[in-house]
Length: 215
Image (cartoon, rainbow, N blue to C red; front, top):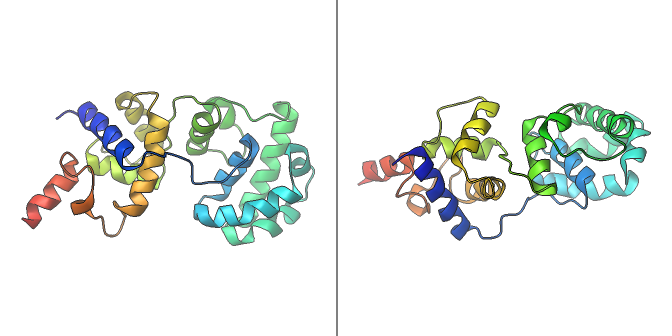
């Protein structure tokens, strides 16, 4: 079976298993998602969702963040970890949005990655979820599961992104990545993957080997 065939089977299997492919971060507008995604680095989405309501009540828009003191923002996000770096990035990115982008979140990978603290993972999430563009969000679940499936042998996030873009249907790629997160939490966990319960165990290269060894 080719990588392309495995990728298409994975898309269909996960679509059936997780029909509702939604981002696990709560947000009301592009800025909220941009900031929430920055906060999610080395932090759970659940924790971010607990922190952001008060943060966005205090700083509701680009201008309020851009004019904020970094220490004031930091007070609201301490429980997210790395809060000093994240608060600096949030204020700096909002100042750039105000000064260079007319206060609007841009809709391209190239523009988004110019913002402080924004890498390709965040940029792809914004392009996919907010602007409906084909996107591949390469997070820890995506890296782990697509490697187990046999879709790549890469470790570099950008290389994985570009390889997966060649294999996934453009209109399915963003939802596919959301479903990988759900599957990575429920079944294909990092420490103890449950291959026997996996909806992809008949074609996942790792799963097939694991189940064969058990028998």
